[in-house]
Amino acid sequence: MTETDYPIVCAVIEDAEEILALQKQAFEKQALIYNCWTLPPLVETVEQWRGQFNDRLVLKALDKDRIIGSVCARQQQHQAKVGRLIVHPDYRCRGLGTRLMLEVESRLPEATRFELFTGHKSTDNISLYQRLGYAIYRSEDARDHIHLVFMEKFRQD
Image (cartoon, rainbow, N blue to C red; front, side):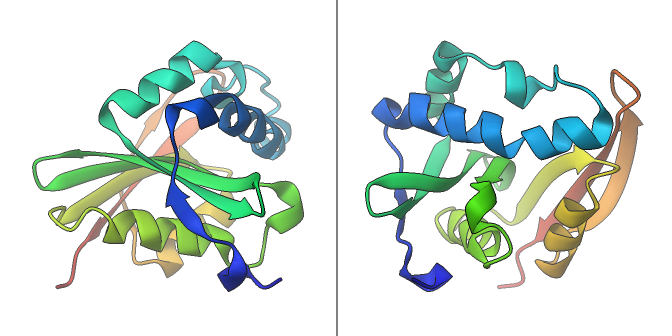
């Protein structure tokens, strides 16, 4: 299969446990980069993840019935905060992250500005977001010697 063969659809609350397991697997690379195993995506609970469905659009990418990627976004007026882009390690570097990002943006047509953040050492993530038109607009220190990079993109319609 090619990356375009994997459908991207809305996730449902019953997917929370599988998405959380994938999230923990996907964020292991970040934990190694930062030498920090208490990153929020690694310590979230299923109950916390179920809460994502209250006010966010949650998408999932599927290979048959298996979730291989996900992203979520919360829109507030004309701004959307994108978060938790995850792709199964076996499916990385195939364009699936790009497709998930473009899909979440397309499903929020009222948003004119998109915002996200990542860690300063997450160069693959930063490069992906820059290719998609995001630019760094601020940074701040977080805990455990992690420096967060905040990026934004404006809809060009």
